[in-house]
Length: 411
Picture 1 (cartoon, one colour):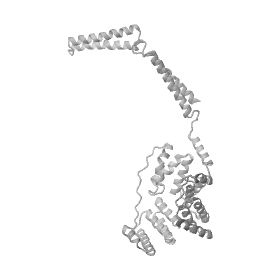
Picture 2: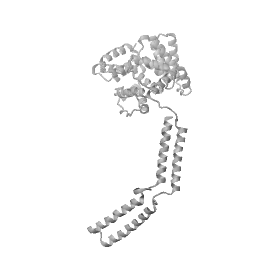
Picture 3: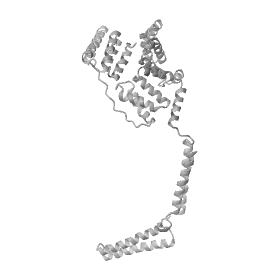
């Protein structure tokens, strides 16, 4: 109500002042246009006399100037004596202008009443936080969100060979329900098939089986699979998994990204911006979340009321790999020869890191290769060594830890 009273008072006062000025013109006292002009002409006449005395004007030019100025003085004097304002707009024009002014103001009020939010109260920060918390508590849970997203998720391209392998893996896991490696592989491959619900179910069983040994990456992967199952929505169940992941490792990049996504969805862009800004500026340059953050952080910053310019992309470390000749030679090898070549490359990488050192991405690459080769004991030894090498570099250690988790050496 206060807003309407203030707006109405300002509208009426503005319209009244403008109408009064248009209808009044310049009448009254020395402010009359004719009186003003008369004073100007008299000054001009005195200036002509001074120019004649200085020799700037000759007698003929001075006489002509006097005649013209005197004519103007007589006209201004007649207008002043008659009380008429030679600059007053016609009354019809003034009334038309006033009517148009009132129409425009009235139209603005009507338009605001139709498109605006009359009567909508101010929304202070505390109220916005309360609304966000209410949204957080009342948002859909995982099963309901999956049902809503099911119709909008594109069907994955069929892969008969992968489906056959996953079918065999399901049978193995059913026979050996305590096989941690089998559950880990099942979760990964169910996700590759687009069966995200089955994937996070396998991941959940793996976490239950590990118990207290479950890692931050286990929980963040569980949350990520649930988010994939809902088409990008972070449910309360996923939020709980993210909270556990960050409790075990506050620097878990995937968990921090998804936590920021959840905060943006419930109406807390200020907190989401803090998560994402730190990841973008201080996290690994090749983190899988970096493209998604860059695509959204400007909008999040604007909603948070922050002027922000993302930093220039940082180059990820270049990893060494097989050259073109080695790749060409591998095409003609038997599977056994190709495996021997891979083992030789892994051995060379391991020896180089042991003697020369290397970037955390290279240590992660080595752990990933050992995981694929199922050389778990060697991978565990590399992880132990990496913890010593990167003990003073938490960000680098996080990169290697993620690879160690994928290699199955974090129990």
